[in-house]
Image 1 (cartoon, one colour):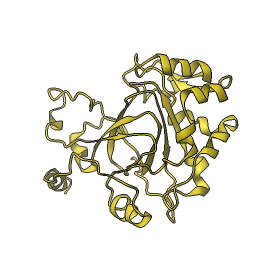
Image 2: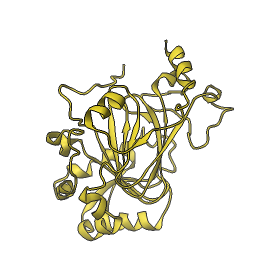
Image 3: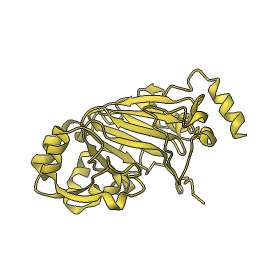
Length: 263
């Protein structure tokens, strides 16, 4: 069944396209994308947020410069830095990290969702700059589900899937996202939990020949844009410049969210 659905999807002229549209009404979003498990870029969904007009690296340095933040560091020397997240945790002053972001490039130092900066009391005021899109996200769970990503040009989140639906919102700078739909799982060299060693920026077909015919869709998200990353969709993310992003999991739906539970 998985093979048949993969073959069918490859016949679609949109197999390598992430649709981009002005934010639809809430019912259309959930019917055509969330429940259908199809990604979409919602252009300008968060354009009116105060965060989009206020948050810059310089603002972070001026407002929180003396406060420490946890980041991940030393990633370049470890090809499995995601697996070894705990070993790469380190604390720095926000002012020093902003200098690294503005002066440097690459993937070595990155403030990621698992650093949980927005859950710390001294950064709670940042959440006042986020306005929950009516009907898309649950305002009651916004503070718990909001996760911050902040880093320089060239940061990479390696090829993986998430266990739930994600609304990824770009605040500052831009990012490139490459995505593969879930039915391609048998060809993605999934070697542990939710990760694959395939580099979607430069696929080595000698090493990974099953990737030869796998359609890869691509999107670029810019400030104010939101990207739905549906449950099970594999994705790879690279910053095209210094970047600040947010991710959310608390959608405005009744009941518990659907989860891909690993065995």
